[in-house]
Image (cartoon, rainbow, N blue to C red; front, top):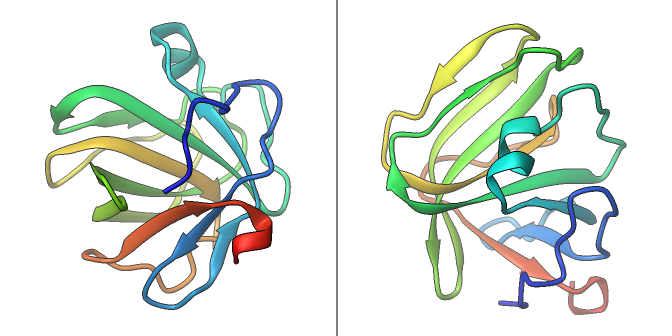
Length: 136
């Protein structure tokens, strides 16, 4: 897996998030939320463009919760467990509506927010891998 150190909150990196099972690129530009203020802000007052995703990296595994306050569009969320080879999907939430709340059904230490419908056919147990575009 590619190093995630290049992830930035306001500027997308040209890294792709790919389903290892299907080979489908879920996103080709990744933003990262790695600090407490970035994770708290998330997608509030922002938009995700087509092909973009916001990857949240947490300090430890827990039953993660998130809110959709001041996020004005529906999103798909993939809760994941970080592994050496990528991210194992442990829960999938599709088309979360603005101003709602959700909690993962399983322990996770990362999650990905995507525009609604972008999660495609991803399901629990899938492995997601971060790649450079030329490696797809």
